[in-house]
Image 1 (cartoon, rainbow, N blue to C red):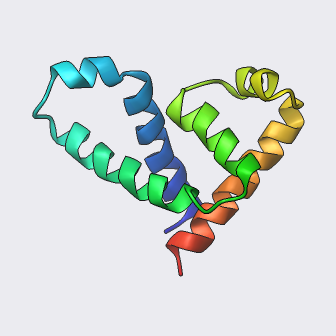
Image 2: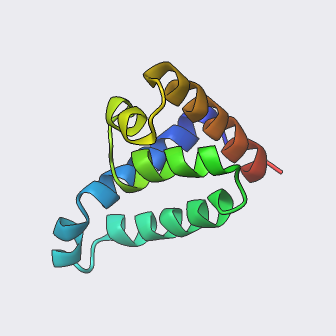
Length: 98
């Protein structure tokens, strides 16, 4: 998997999580089924990640926070949040491409 493919999948996960209520009303959509598979895949991968990466993943991709909002809630700088997101991508790519 490439970084661009990873980012696209994570954007689907984020979009689903931020619009979960809408998708629950539309039960039988192909997007929902495929995205739920992705959510499960990333949940399995992130569970063994370092805690800081787990926290950033949760804020950005589960709660749908912006980087600035995530930084504020985690009491870290936006630049450090960006650094953690880059590390998160690297971590996930290494696990996926094994």
